[in-house]
Image 1 (cartoon, each protein chain N blue to C red):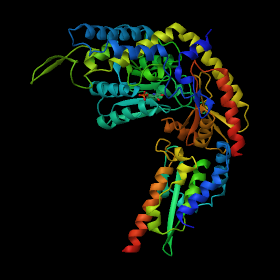
Image 2 (cartoon, rainbow over the protein chains, first blue to last red; image 1 turned 45 degrees about the horizontal axis):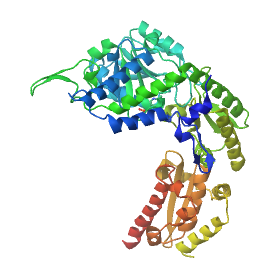
Image 3 (spheres, protein in one colour; image 1 turned 135 degrees about the horizontal axis):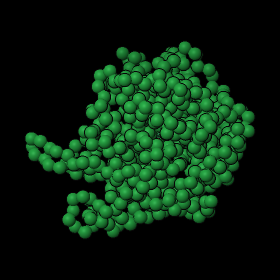
Image 4 (spheres, rainbow over the protein chains, first blue to last red; image 1 turned 90 degrees about the horizontal axis):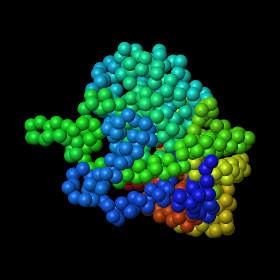
Length: 405
Length: 141
Ligand SMILES: Cc1ncc(COP(=O)(O)O)c(C=O)c1O
């Protein structure tokens, strides 16, 4: 069970009026709010601790480094990686994908090779692969999904051949909410010796992740979508890949020995963390994970699933409302459109009613093309949302309908 | 009426609405009543892509004055398009180039013309002024 009254006090942003109304924040898919436990500790860090990491002999630099490496350890446990050195800090999901597309691409992909992505990828897990394919004259192949928003997994084997090097797939669709059966898919891919990258930007905050159980080769996510600061992200990669892949960026803190002629690199994770990293962001991510652990990711998942079911049922009763993404397994994300009413119009009026949703294509243009629409209204719930929030959304949608009909 | 007078007239009209809801309902009405743009102008060439909503705009010069037709796929956007056309239609290129569109702010709709909304309206105003400049250059050549 989850104590909403107590939890909501932890998130100051939620406790205000917007456009004169109690704020209903349903844009958690874009970014999540931060608990005071993260906000205060970060402010405190700047007040009392701040120092650059890894290079100081002095007291606070050591403390700073300890907190940074402590965050790495927390993440290792949170996703059950085998080793801390398999956790690389990045700027976010997009940065993590670009790192793999570059470094994996340099090591393993050559002309004529193939990469597979699904048709429901966020542009961040699509464009870097398109760029790699262009650079290496490789081919990008697409795993389709059906009308309910479920991947057509039976088509996967026919997309794989001897040239296939990697499958990059989202765990959860950010526009449709579909939870893909990644464990089964990884099994299939591995049978053909194809490496798999899982985009966990929309799954890490909603369910228990165990990268060893999934057996994925790469897993990427963003801190800001899991209650931490912006500008920090994670790349988990199996050690064998981290050892084999060349560095992505060169700079300080990633080198073993530098002369003007030749430089040798440190081992992972440092090989992939050039320059001054966002150590405060990493610290905040560790704090956010602590916070989640005190509530329990299973409790979070349960409450969010209840919200999903409740809101889906209520919205479905509205005449002329279509939900896009009706997969069996979904996270608490509902994309919808009202008949003959533009998503922008709906979003504008909801905003006036103090309800924050996202409108547009959600960086998944191919998904919109599939449904032959220009965008949707997306309500994405987090564990601090209430059934009353869902009611407010439903009331708001009814108001929109009344205004535009 | 001058551009300034029409804007004052619109401000007067909007001052009658106490509630934001009434204001938006009026915008929706204006959007619905906006004369249809000729379908031949509803192509990419005339499209101002605002990412969130789309705006199509055409301008023609007749007897030294510019006449606009426009459309949008979102109704609120279209309502504001209608207001912009009402203010700038039938004006000389020079008037359009130099127009100070103060009414948007005064009627509390400036958020709709903010670059962060990305609804095509800001780009539309720019495009209207570009037409003013282009036709002005043409008249003077
Ligand atoms: C599924 C998915 N992948 C990737 C991203 C990109 O994340 P970021 O912008 O934090 O790099 C997002 C964010 O919207 C997402 O939802």
